[in-house]
Every structure is written in C-alpha cells, then in structure tokens.
Length: 461
Figure 1 (cartoon, one colour):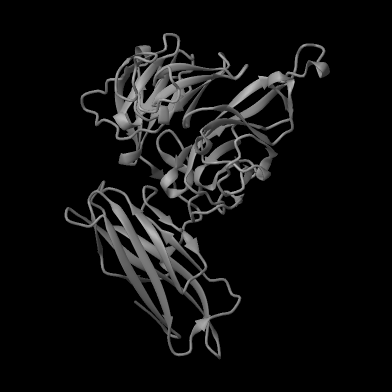
Figure 2 (cartoon, rainbow, N blue to C red):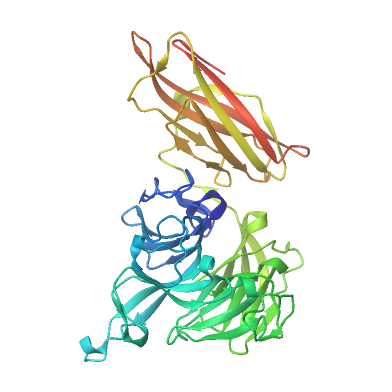
C-alpha cells in the first residue's frame, strides 16, 4: 500500500509497480463508503491488521479510517473530521475528536484481566498505536474490549492518550521487545516507548532535556552525542536489531543499532541520486528490500540490503496501470481536440476550467444523470476531482509528472449528458481532449479554460 498524500488516495500495488486498486483520490474530502466513493484529506501512515483490514491516518481530516478490502468499504473509527484539542481522550469511535494523526502501528497484547482467564492463557487483543502529531502525543485505539495497563478495562473503540512527546511522527514497532520506537520530529530525536508500562527512554538525538527543541544537527554517534534534523519515518528490521530512520532535513537515510543506541548514516551507491526529504519507510518480509518514499522527487525507491543491513544498490518503483475492464470505450465518443498545452519537462500543476454553453433551446434534462470524468495517461498523473455531475462549469487540478518518454499525452474529459429541447431528448456523449506537450521552457503552473458549445445537432469547442 502507498499513501499518496498529495493526491489524497491510497494505492494498492504489486512489487513490480502494477496498480491493483486506487482507493479515494477522485475528490478531496471526508466521506465513508465504497473503495471507489470514499474520500480522504492528505492521508499519511498506514498499517495492516490482516490481509483484508487496513487502517489509515487521515491527517487533515483528523481521523482514523478503516479500509476493508473484503467488504469493499471505508469507515471512520476515530475522529470527527474536525481538529480536536482533547489531550486525554476516553470517548468511543467517531465521538472522540483527535488532532493530525500521522503514523500507525498495531500492538498485540495479552488481555490482562486474569480473573476471566484462570488457565493463564488470556486472549490476545489488538491495540492501534497512533502518533498524534497535532497534540504531540501517542494515543491508543482499542480495537477490542481490552484490559491493559494497571488492569484498566477499555471498551472496543475507546481512544486515549498514553504518552507525551515533542511531535511524534513515525512509529516502528518491535513486538518481541514490546516497544515502539518514535520519530520525535520537533526534538530531532528517536525515542522508545515501552508498551508494558509506558516508560519513555532516549535512543539517539536531542539532549537530556526533552524540552530542548534546538539540539538538531547531522552527526553519527550514540545517544545524545548523535544528532538528527526533523526525523520522520521509521521502520524496524524483522529481527528487531536495527531501526531505519528517514532524517528528512538532512536528506539522509540512517540506521540505528537499538542495542547500542547508536546511529550511522547509510552510504548510497555512487550512481544513486540522494533522496530528497525521505519521510516514509517500509521493509519487505524477507528483510532484503527497504522501500523509501522520496517525497520531493515524487518517487518510491527500493534500497536493496546486504550484510548488516547496508545498501548494495537502489532502484525505483515505476507505477504501471493495469488493464481496467471498466475503461471507457472512446470509439463511441465525438472527440473535440483543443490547442496543446506546453508544460515544463519537470512537470507541474494544470488547472482546467470547463464551461458548457447551450444553444437553440437546448438544455439539460431535469433529474437525468449527467456525468463527467477525467481520463489520464497513466497513474503517475492525477486529477482532483476525478469525476462529478456538476457539468455546466467546473474546475479540475491536474498534477502532471516529469517527462519520462516521447509519447503524446492527452487529458481527456469524458462527458455523458442527457439534454433536451421542448420537443425531444438528445443524449450527448463527447470527449474534450487537451494535448499535453513537454518543453524545456514550459511553465510549471498553468491555467486553461475550455469552452464547449452544445446545440441540438452539434457539439463545438
């Protein structure tokens, strides 16, 4: 899974980059429902509970969302959709306001109520651990009725604060050690939180004074002698010997020995371009590939790991669009070609306004379905919104990726309208095609207006 934050969508991909499914992304918003209809707002951290259930830190919606791949559904399990200021919690589900959740992990803990488990084999409960960046805390969302610290009972759906930090961002669970490592970005450090008793201890970075937010830098070493700058992403190796940290403002990937509490900078192979602002990390099940979100370059990179988890080479994941059986058959549509738009070779943002005008007594048929959708060259492109039914005058924002080949690219707006005169109804199906040309001197931010004139017997642009 990839949390494509800028496009407010979740992508399910295969290891070769083939996209299996897009969840959300048609429109920025806060909406539960099917995987196609759901809306997100700058989602960040993701975690699987099992092969069918995925939780999402929907950051700008201030909510935790649950994706059920088996039931084809998205639902909100915590948060109201508005930023909360509660620093204690205790409410259940959508009644509990939260603030800018950033990352997630799931801790499996034995239920501590031995009264009901005299055989000494209590059931294991799932607890969702949340880096709540907005209130500078770590919270827990109990996915089942759970008796936890100090034998306190928490009903399913309860969301509470369990620890305070400077600004927790990334989380890395070490289940065997019953610890979660926290990228505390504002203190430029990594700290550990015991999931047995809530004790917080230093790992690397910062100083002995947790209130000092200016002890940042770029230095390998142990404990407080080491220096980071705005650490964000974390991931632990499968044997829980090392934790990788995305040291974002230093534009570096570093490795923490969690036994020695020491950090070293990982050397990139000579042919690799250093990552620019790497915030997110994920490791493969065989411990041989580290997936790195390279935000400023809009890439997913793969660091191939050798002995002692050092990098041997770096490749990148190229997103590939799978054949979609629901794809539009464009042979049935009239195509209206517009003037080409020149975009910079580095890509950019294209804002397109579509305006439909009606002639000779033609208008939209009342209560009939009126739809449009934006069809793009490949998954590296995105449109917000992606479709809609307000067809007379609307605006879309197209994210154009950097040039990667010489082929022609088109942005197609596909319209399916039902129109009528005073005498008859006339369906209108047409495509407004805008060619995109890459040039060295093209702009990175453009506005384009597309006017369409509809008459009873014609469609003109």
